[in-house]
Amino acid sequence: MSKQDVVSGYCSFDRKKSMPIFVLIALFIVLWSIFFSFYTPEQIVTMLGVQNAYIFVFLLSIIVGVSVFTTTLFYTSLVAISFGGVNLVWVSLLASIGLLSGDLVVYYFSKTGSQCVPEKYGGIIVRLIEWTKKYSDNKIILVIFFYSLTPLPSDAISIFLGVTSFPIRKMVIPLVLGKFILILVFLELVMLGYSFF
Image (cartoon, rainbow, N blue to C red; front, side):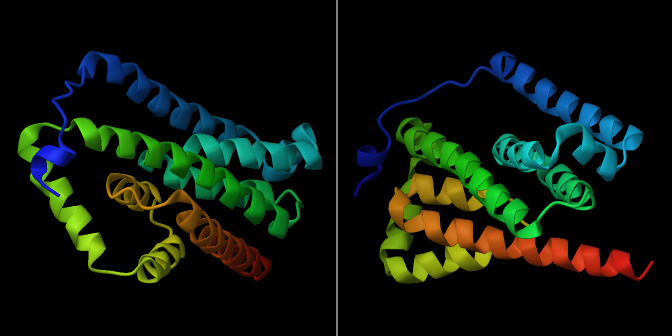
């Protein structure tokens, strides 16, 4: 595959158009932090109701799953909601599915965006595609799973998978399973640590 096969043109990105998105993310983080400083986890779950708290976790996961800047906010929100008396397995499952939804958005944008990168970066995409061809899909699935077990944002691996056009059906299960295990273990450890105080 040549550089010309990958790079079909130059797409100019308007920084003025992306500024409102950055401002909205920053505003969301600030407002969310203020919200948690006024209400305890129990009050938040009481206001939402337990069933609505699960829906809230799912929607929050979708929103923060699209941005690398909101990872810390996401985990602190999960901890706060978990202290409200919700089922940790359900929270972990819904959060991991919500994160997958955000990851799929990033995957889609990186896959379509890789077709219109500036020519000087086309070689990087060609090298990434050639590098992934050296490994079997099963090895890449293992990398996805083990990466998902870390608290690192999934955006990075979703971008990589999108650029290399790795099949979605092969990335869904390792992403969800890895994040589910990570979130459940993280919340259980937080609850265990909190019980000592």
